[in-house]
Image 1 (cartoon, rainbow, N blue to C red):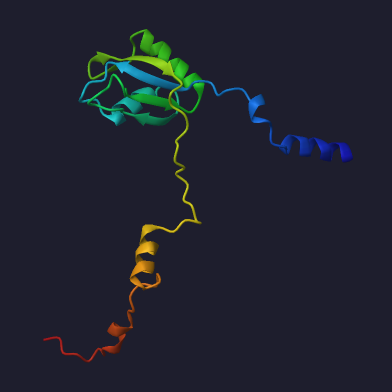
Image 2 (tube, rainbow, N blue to C red):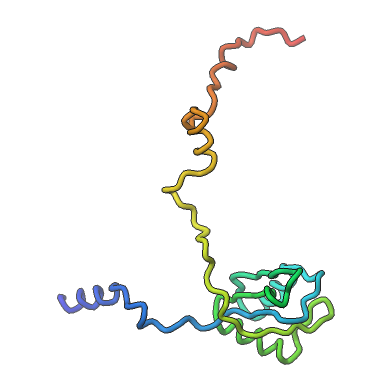
Length: 152
């Protein structure tokens, strides 16, 4: 029984970061074929034919050379399948065959989208500064009025 416990502990022990291999590239940079009228949803829908898309970003439309559109797939095999189809000229958007290449410039989102409970939001800061303490306004005033007021 002691050996089974040791194996479980070994499996749960965090691994050395240097020992883990670098993540496979699952991001494609679209270097051509997107016009000014190409929307993010059109590009994403076209890329989802090849696998689940985590992020589809249109880059800087005013400067697509420096900041091109890019698509990050959940799995590297989705990016591989999309790139193969793109190189074969099978991915056409708005009448233009797109051109893409693998990219490692894009990583995971820098900002977590998970809500952080420890932080104070703007509403709480405003209420603290205004001296209300976050309780909202006192609503008892409306309860003092009776229902006997005339409705004319």
